[in-house]
Amino acid sequence: MKEVSLKISNISSKQWTSLLIELNLVKSSWKRFGPDIKIKAKNFDKIIKWGRKTNGENTSDINTDFQRNNRKTNITF
Picture 1 (spheres, rainbow, N blue to C red):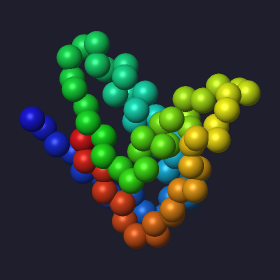
Picture 2 (picture 1 turned 180 degrees about the vertical axis):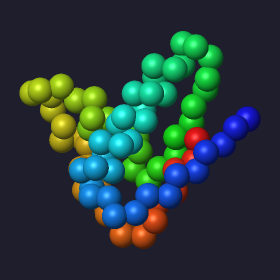
Picture 3 (picture 1 turned 45 degrees about the vertical axis):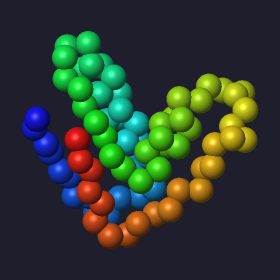
Picture 4 (picture 1 turned 30 degrees about the vertical axis):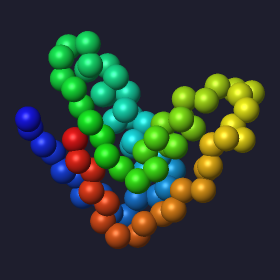
């Protein structure tokens, strides 16, 4: 198994959400070629669920209160 760790600082909550959604798209796209990518991040499931919602979809079950952490954030694959 190979592992990559990213340390990200000075990122806004919108940028953080977009980054996680993009990484999840890469994970989904590469799955058919064999790699099994695991992403660990705080509130990852909530962010992806929010990112996959369609226009007009009921989002009352999604808690969109993401806490911004001004410290360095680690992502492990």
